[in-house]
Length: 364
Ligand SMILES: Cc1cc2nc3c(=O)[nH]c(=O)nc-3n(C[C@H](O)[C@H](O)[C@H](O)COP(=O)(O)OP(=O)(O)OC[C@H]3O[C@@H](n4cnc5c(N)ncnc54)[C@H](O)[C@@H]3O)c2cc1C
Image (tube, rainbow, N blue to C red; front, side, top):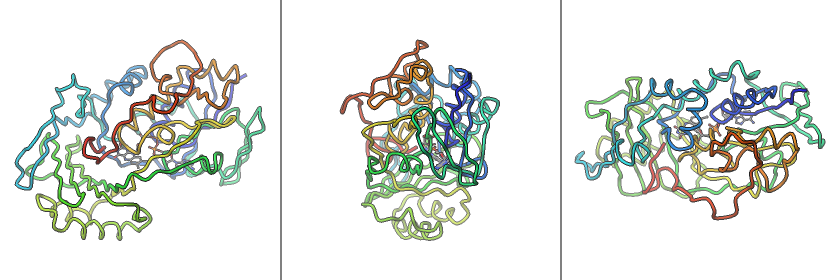
């Protein structure tokens, strides 16, 4: 008999996992709280484990066709002089500028389209309550439906409400003292295939990147202690950015001028979720929440943690126990085709990458 799995969240991890689980004989439902496909997002590098996952899903060529053609990142001063440069050819295409790069929205759409036949998608709903009975999980949806599943997989990103529901005060949200706003803007005469990163005094940075759609992707970063800016309205956030960046210099005025027209404006507080475990009974976390600081390399972790190379066998043996995560361990991402159960790594065993916007990393 087929196992019934509910995945919550249809961004990167959810659809990728839906595809894999279908291939492993599961009946999959994906529920997404947004009423329609969520567009938006910046350039995402496809490298390392993430690249292996898309190769195995047969998506590498489709991603290549949609690549942003970013050639390098140049760190510029206020006169637009290049002070440092990192090219895509460096680090064998797997460095800070990956040879393969795609907009987040295009990747999400590819994964969704690829997995449409693998799962029943429900948009505009979410879990209102769940109860793990040991052998099944009872789920009540906000729109009123009640169903039971063999497994509930939470792929809701950093702000997950189902995670809080199931794990309560085990969830620790650690702010990384950074706000970032993202949006698309008209391409300017200096915008080519080289991204430009400008740091201004006061913990501010402006990052302009090419895309394959004829626009420029802008990111404004602000290093500040948590002040709840993410809870402001969009108009208030835009006003805040205009005030903070007013004297930043370089090409910042044209970036600020584009703010009012930005339809895909996305503002967030960068943080990290820390969890002592990634599964509790029959509820499992995948994707971003248990594994990555917001953004940096998060999508690669999301997609690789969704490649359940090791899960089906372990599920059959019902080995979803504390300390074991059949889905989220990085070791699962090493694309072995052998089924196995994954041991959660101990503290400090994972090398931690700096968060986006921090001096030694790149924004998404
Ligand atoms: C609109 C958007 C723009 C983004 N822009 C960028 C970017 O520019 N650069 C970058 O590196 N990363 C971006 N990300 C995040 C990136 O997708 C993740 O960092 C990473 O890929 C991990 O993906 P994920 O699937 O684990 O989580 P996320 O991509 O965060 O997706 C979580 C999904 O779950 C849904 N969801 C949340 N709560 C519930 C709920 N209770 N019930 C049902 N569904 C729920 C959300 O609507 C979302 O679709 C963006 C994400 C979104 C949603």
